Length: 236
Image 1 (cartoon, rainbow, N blue to C red):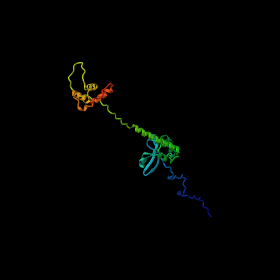
Image 2: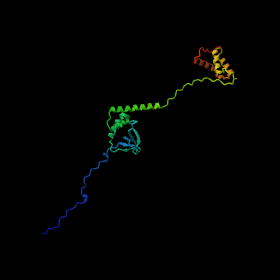
Image 3: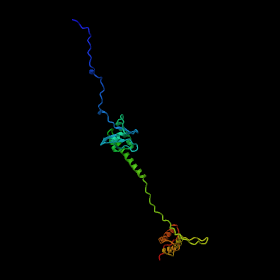
Image 4: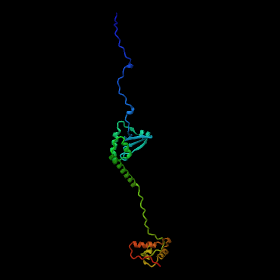
C-alpha cells in the first residue's frame, strides 16, 4: 500500500467567520446626561429650568437684578445660548445658590434651583429677603427720581402803579407829587372816607374805577412798613 507523500493542506477558515476583536459597547443615547447649563456669546451662563409649551424657562446670572426666571421661545433660546457640555448642572446650581444669598432670588428661581441642589430654609429666607429689600429700594429710587411738583406760591401783590399823566413841571427843588404819595398823605390826614380819598386822587391822576381798592392797600402798606398811628377808615 502506497502512502501519499503530499502534505496535508490545513483547511482555511473563511474571513467572514473570523471573530471580530471585542469593542467597547456604545452607550445608549438615552443614558447621556441632559445638558442644562448654557452660555451665550458673551460667556454669560444660564441654567435651564424646563421646556414647556414651546418656551424655555431659564435663570440667567445677573449681578444687578439677582436671580429670577426669564422666558424665551425654544428657537430663540437655542439660537442665543449654546450648551456647556462639561459643566454639571448641580455644580452650577450650587454656585448660583451661593450668590443668591447675596444678590437675592425670587421663589420661582429657587424652585428651579432646588431641582438640582439642596436648598435650606435659611438660604431661602436670605435670598428672598434680599430680593424683596432690593425691589423696595429700587422702587424708592424710582419714586425719588420723579420730579416733585413745585408748590404754587401765591404771587405777591405788586404795588399798584399809578396811571401816568402829563403834569406841568414844578419849580426846581419842589418835590414832585405822585398818586402813591397822595394816597398816603390823605390816609394819614384821617379826614376823608376811602371813597372820597380815591375820588380825589382819581380826579388828579386819571385813575380807572377798578383801582378803588388802592386806598385799602396803601393803608395796610403803611402799617406793614412800621408807620405809627395810621388812621382807621373814616365812616360817614
